[in-house]
Amino acid sequence: MPQRSKFQNYLEYYALKTSMFFMYLFPLSFAQKIGQFIAVFAYYFIPIRKKHVINMLAVSFPEKSKDEIKNIAKNTYKNFMKTVVEMVFFPVLSDDKITNMMVYENENVISDALAKGKGMILMSAHFGNWELTALSFSKKHPMSVMVATQSNPLVDEMINGIRTKKGFKAINKDDKMAFRSIIKTLRANETVAFLADQDAGKQGVFVPFFGRLASTPKGPALFAIKTGCPIVTAFGVRQPDQKLKVTLAEIPLPNTGDEEEDIKIINTIYSKHLEDAVRKNPDHWFWFHRKWKTRPTETTITNY
Image (cartoon, rainbow, N blue to C red; front, side):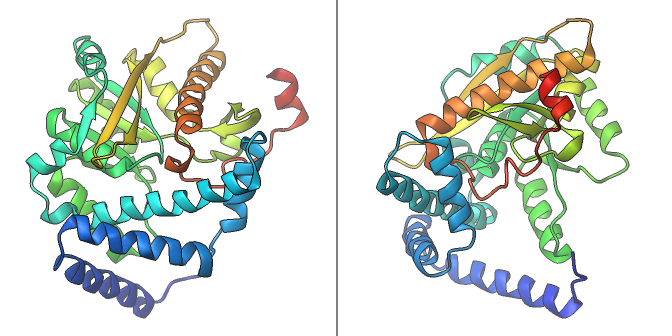
């Protein structure tokens, strides 16, 4: 990755701050309408990764027509912009507003998991509004979220500041103290959340996702196996009133005696839960990711 200049970082930072200032002049509902216009404009005239999104949708949904695929792709842009606008408004939204923007389909899954006293791993994805899901969750249950470092350090500091001020703790995955922070959080019977849907490279475990093997992070499963804490999947679907309805499901911890096999089992179940959610609402998932970038070797396929 090329070295970024301070000028570029400051330019992006103040451009973002200025955009946020003007967005706050309008209510969230009107800002969302502006966001939808920008999304449609971007889909037609600034088609960043548009071809990639359409290709991945076509391969994943071979039963759908070209028009259906293009419509899903366009709605993917629109849903992502809804997420961006909502994130921009987080600093000016009250805690009650953020809490009320999410409803649980089966909240007892959380209470049952935390009642075991070992903390909880929450496996989610870039689905719906993942940031809102985390913030709303943290209003009821203390939580830390594994995050990646943004390329712009000024923007990175601002985003993490919003996250921390509004509810949850951010654990940088590149921090040398990340492992210790996760263990400390679980021992306090709190939750650690992971967005585990991105390509994990050669270090990941290959499991099926839409009929193709995809590299999936081992970390969440490994922490659950090592500590014995429950592991729960969570995916929020937008409702007509723009609230997120979150479906929760606990993944039973396997005990085959083979750690690698247990990790594969957990990730297979997680990927199945995510695929089910995406099949029901394909425009909710972040298809811009290169999910299948890393390909398995012949040995990997043989052992699968």
